[in-house]
Length: 259
Image (cartoon, rainbow, N blue to C red; front, side):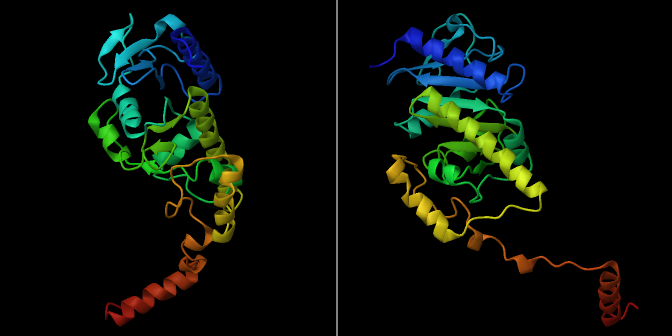
């Protein structure tokens, strides 16, 4: 049964509280929307902590971002949400947050695309990185457009992450998964480097999606995730002692006639 407008408002309040309690946003960061129907979207207000919202704070806009109902101002990043809805008819909710570890990867220019965790491979495939764009402008959306149809979760260069799904709870849970995956990846790197699964195991996990009833838009997308065989060969990294490096430099100088 479709939810009432009041239930949608309450759902956003609950998700906002969880996003804030989990530390996925700080201060007034982040935004949440629900597609109400083909013509209306409910969104969070700007300048309000996601952990302190009231159902009556929500704004209703049309598919061009024009306010229909609400006393406050809607999120300044509504255009990003609307772009996702227009490209993904199956999506009915979007959650944007700044999860600290995942955002750290984004700030370092690193996608979360390694084949490390079976649950992530089955549920998301991987989490690609869209290039940086100025928040609240079309430049933010432009790098995301090729990725939105293929993935259910994206990292945004130097900005944060955005996840979406059939309802606002699925969108939120994907955000939790992204941050959890980022933390595990970071710990693996601190402990000497992650052990990436081979392509054969990745293919088995992709095939297992049908058994779990999981539909992922990145079905068969190349390098999503990156398997062990697709990484740069271990032998491409060369390690030298200080003495060996000095010897190589001296040889180069001698051969050039400068020594």
